[in-house]
Length: 87
Image (cartoon, rainbow, N blue to C red; front, side, top):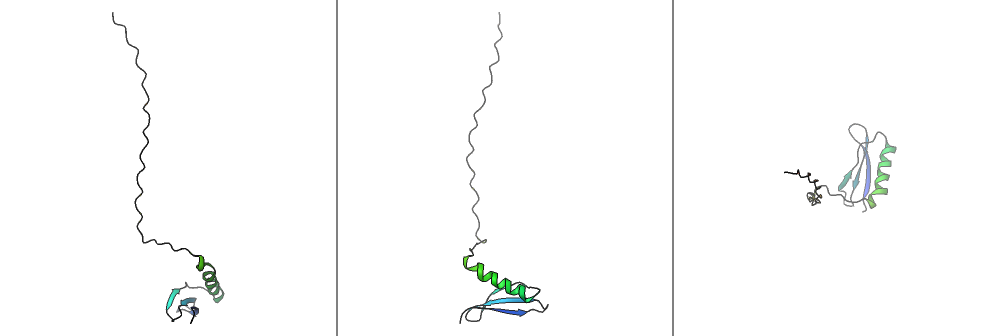
C-alpha cells in the first residue's frame, strides 16, 4: 500500500493533515489551516517540493573556525633626529 495524506479536523475545528506510510504509520504532520482549501495547498506544496528538499542536520556541532595567521605589518621607520654638533 503506498503512502497517503489524510485530511481531518482537529479539536479547534481547523483542518490538518497527516502523511501516512504504506503500513499506516504517521510519518509527517501538517500545521492547522483555517479552511480545507488551504490544507490541500499545504499537501500540494509538500508533494511538489519534498522530492528535491535537502537534508540539513542542525544537530552536528560545527568546528570552531581556525584563526587565520595575521600578516605581519611592516614597521614604519622613524626618521633619525639630526645630531647636534657638539664643540
